[in-house]
Length: 95
Image (cartoon, rainbow, N blue to C red; front, side, top):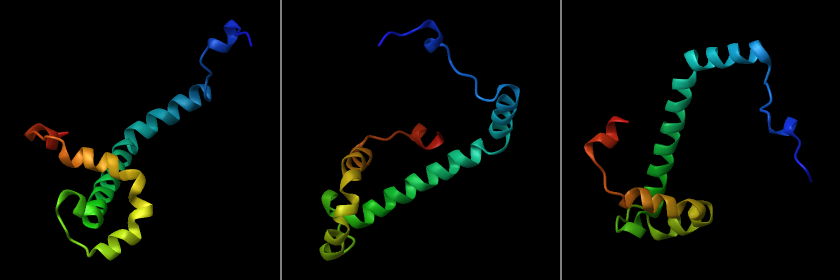
């Protein structure tokens, strides 16, 4: 396939109305969306800590329940262990 110069141009999304929608979104709900995503991530982090804490030596739940939840948590374990074992600084909390 050959690429034409017109394929390289970015496409407009709604013109002036799209720009206005983006501005209103940025002014009204962008911060709420970021806070909701951050809250969800911290809740998932806490859930994995409670269920799979044995991997780090923090046994909270009996192994039976951890093993029952293992198939649902398996894709997230690598990233979770990386976040738990990462060195933290005081400035990490400020972000």
